Every structure is written in C-alpha cells, then in structure tokens.
Image 1 (tube, rainbow, N blue to C red):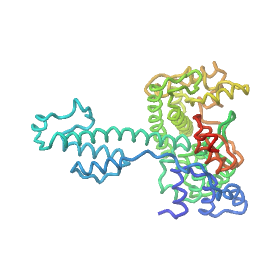
Image 2 (cartoon, rainbow, N blue to C red):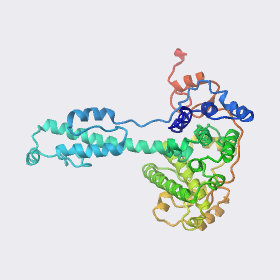
Image 3 (cartoon, helix red, strand yellow):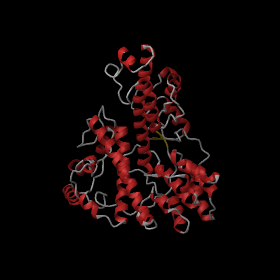
Image 4 (cartoon, rainbow, N blue to C red):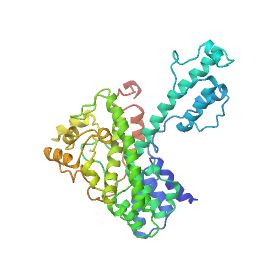
Length: 435
C-alpha cells in the first residue's frame, strides 16, 4: 500500500500535469537537503499559478450508454466494465446467442434471420423486437472497435511522450527516490510542443539530473521501473539481464502495435513521403503520435539490445526511424529562415517502412549505413544504427502557456484566444461588433 504522497505521484503518470505541479508533490514525498530543495523550488514555486491548458490526455468514450440499453433488451448478465473492450467483446458474444446471432455477423440484410429462420431456431420473439436487438448488437460491435482504436491511440500518445511509463504499476512506486524521478521526468516528457522553427526543449533538465543522482546514491532504487521511461546506459547497467530481456520484449511488442497503426494510417492517407508536409486528407494527428511512439520505443529497444550484447541483431534487422508530418506554415517558416527539409528525410524515403521490416523485408545495418552515407547523415549520431547519443542536461525553464502551440503571456488570455479559435487555422468565432 503506497503512502498518499507516492500514490499521488503515481497517478500523474496517466495525466498531463505541469512539471511545476509535480515538483510540489515531489517535495512532499521525500526528504531533501537545502541545495536540492532550492533547485526543486525553481519549479514548485510556480505551482500555485492557474493554467488554461488541460491537465490530462483525452480519454476515449466508454460504452456506458449502450450498456444501459442492452441491460433492458438482453437477459445475459451485464456486470461488465463499459470501458474494457475485451470484456465487452465477451459480453456481446454471449448476449447475441439469445437471438442466434454470430459475433461479427452484422450485415442487416444478409445476417438477420427470417421469420422462418427464427421459428426454426425456436425463437418466440416478434420481428420488431428481434430487429431492435440485432441493430443494437451490431452498433455495439462497431462502436467497440472504434473505442478500442481510440484506446490504442491514447496508449501510443502516452508512449510517444514517456515510453512505457503507462505500463508501470503502483507497486513500482514503493521507493520514494524512484517515484520522484519518474513522476517529474514523465511530466517533463509530457510538455506540449511549441510552434517554432527551432528544436524543442529537452525533457531531461537539471531537476531530473538531481533526482536521478539521488537514485544512483540509494540502494533501494527500482532501476527496472526507471528503465521503462529512461533506458539509457547508466540506468540499464543497474538492471539484471533477466529484467532487461523482459523489457526488450515489452518494447518490441508495443513497437509492433505502433507499426501496424502506422501502416493503417499510411494506407488511408496520401502522405507526400518526399516532403512529409501535411496535405488535406492526411490524418496528421494519428500519424505524428504513432511516429513519436515508434521512435521512442525504437531508441529504447536499441539501448536494450546494446546493453545485452545483442547488437548483432541490428546487423540483420535495423528498422528505420519515422518522420512526423510537418504543418505547411512551419515548413514555409523553415524555408524562409534559410532551412530545408529535415536531414532524415532522405534516409526515410530510401529505406523500407517499419511495418515492412517487421514483416520480413530485408533492412540490414549495412543498408541503412549506405543510405545514410548517400544523404550525408551520420548514422550513429543521428540514431539510425545505434542508441541515442549521450544524454545532455538542460536548464529548467518554466512551462509556457500555449494556444495551439503558440506561447501566450497569460493563462487568462490563452483561455480567451482558445475559446474564439485563434491560432487554430479556422475562422475566428467573434465579430468586430462583439469586441
């Protein structure tokens, strides 16, 4: 059983709280010396300020409303969590037996039973009541698939920010130093991207560095838990080979899920692979979230392979990175300021897609290195054939108030601008007469 302070830190892993708010909770969860408290206060002193930005990631809808109707129409026990899609599939397969419907057979014209068919099955139910139950079951099956997809997208959204933090359990937060580092680092990883033609702020800041040093100085640190979010060499050397092997499997399993979703989005969108600039009809949100998850997982997978001495695997299978889609205005800004396409665009275009590599298409380390040399990209420093370069420590900077990625001076102004659609790319929802 966790203390209230450690439980509060654990609960932040599924949310998007500001690092400042998490820093305040960190101060309450452990004992710090004067220097450490002074460093933490850089962030915690700002925790009492209000923010217009959501402190959570969007949650998919549940099937609660459909279940309330199903309880009235089907006799099958409906003690089911409407947000658990595996349980919903089991419930529907059982409930549909009442009307002799097969799970997945949802065509209203082809799969319904006729009057004679219902009579042959011994069903004493009117056509109207039968159709009502069939339609509900078919709609619930379709919604279950939509909700399941949204749940996968949310999971990958978390992964794109903090790798496998969402897979940690409360029992992993028993050690205070471990909990403090993971919670604050995840909060830094969850920072929103700023609309800029420069690089984004690095999540590992001086407060992260201090908290991780406390972990190195402690004998009770849960290094396996930390490796879920920061699989760097100095972390992995403290994790047993057995646990590293298990982590390797976890990383690869989620990589496969991300690759399949990337394939699905690619097939449904006409993405310009040579520029990776968003065009009408591109599902840029899903693509960018999933690409971010793939790249995070891939770098962690590489780190684990190298730490286990299995880097020869990469000799025969070296899946490449995935580029995100860039907004046209940001791309124009890059060009206007003397920039060009991202350096990784060339290798991205010349190498097989990740889902093709995972399905067996050859993509060896030598092939990746040859392509990188062709485009004058360093395959090691850029992370195409090896783990990320040595970690750098950034200075702490306050979390900016953003409206669609644009920094705004105050939360109150941000709330107003967001409500009327400023920076959204859509017409502003206010007229001159209303101002």
